[in-house]
Amino acid sequence: KNEVEQSPQNLTAQEGEFITINCSYSVGISALHWLQQHPGGGIVSLFMLSSGKKKHGRLIATINIQEKHSSLHITASHPRDSAVYICAVRSATGNQFYFGTGTSLTVIP
Amino acid sequence: KAGVTQTPRYLIKTRGQQVTLSCSPISGHRSVSWYQQTPGQGLQFLFEYFSETQRNKGNFPGRFSGRQFSNSRSEMNVSTLELGDSALYLCASSPRGGEAYGSPLHFGNGTRLTVT
Figure (cartoon, one colour):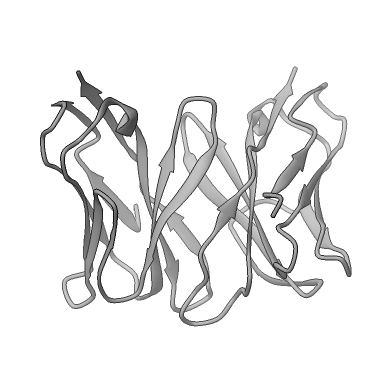
């Protein structure tokens, strides 16, 4: 049983396209994280959310606590956005971290 | 400010041996958490330390252990290595840990462990 489900698993987009990655979770959470991982392994934390919406540059993250769903949007996508995007939640009970399997994004020039 | 530093970057060990990995958090961060990443299982949570105390632990056998020192540096140890322990081990630090609202995570570049 996966506590965190992401879709799609793979995504190919043309430069400039608007991209959405979805994350659904089944546990009560205290926080949700969106992470970016480039080839080579380094992980960067993009957002931490507990409610509402956050924006950073071309990236927007939203969360709906009642529906247990979050989305990561990339506006005007660029080849440098090519990476694996991972959704992670910290459970409200037990403070465990659960991770989605990631969405591999390729942006073609 | 220096980022999270993990050492060593690469490690090759033989089945049955033990290994110790090190993580130095960002200055001022008191929480360190550890994760295992494999192609088959993805990212999995190992444990989290805050102020030298283990706050929570993932679903891993007792061969995996860790500790945190008074300067917030952390080590994790894997004893009696198995082939399946080959993975990228990542640590992350945050200013606080274990609180209901969470804290942003700052990841190190990881230690890639190969068990032969």
